[in-house]
Length: 208
Image (cartoon, rainbow, N blue to C red; front, side, top):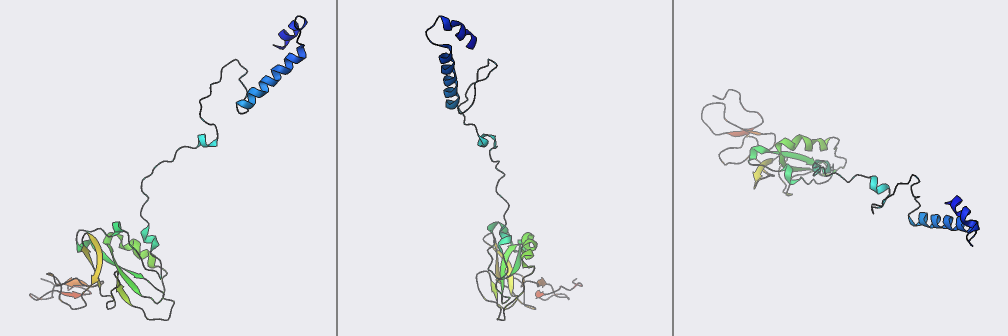
């Protein structure tokens, strides 16, 4: 357009330099209005999609990976009371449950908690390194805070959830609705014929 404008300069009253200045100003205004971009020089036409251009447009949308795995076992720390997730308590019978003994304070007190037997090992990992550091009396409680003799906790399934109850001791009668043996004890039949079952650390191997 520059050469054409200059050839017309002798026929027009507008000087060639003025026309060039006007063209330059028009190009500058259009560039600033379009966000600093220049029109293509190869004759093609650029279309504005209307979407803002920036780094956000290059970031892919977040992908939903579902609910993260439960990490409540990691929340059971030494010298603090522990809250067990409901999913780690689900059960259909007492056989699904186990007693998790957690050090609840620096005295070495134990909080006996009912958990699914399949989750017991994971929870017991929290007790690694838990050492009583205070010179004070320790007690043994069920998860509801009830104090019982040391180790006298049993795991039962109540309303579809594992809980701890006061268990039977060594030599106590068990079975047939008499109660559950405490942690580390099992309900054993007597060594000879007849007689009721009793709680014991080990069961006789010569049961007929």
